Image 1 (cartoon, one colour):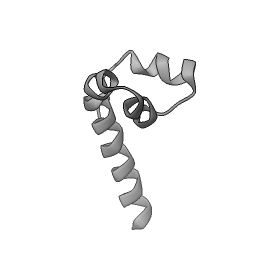
Image 2: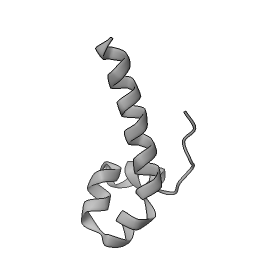
Image 3: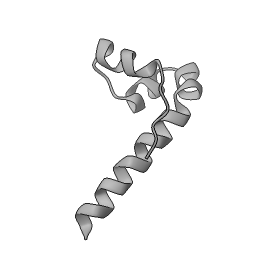
Length: 53
């Protein structure tokens, strides 16, 4: 699955927080990171569905 590059990757490591945590802290972050967060959620769902088999 493709994952769009985002500046949020640098922020995750700098602040040691997840994308969801960053989105909860700021309305602007919620808007900016929405697409990348959705992509991560799709990856997590794919992983979960493969382990459920």
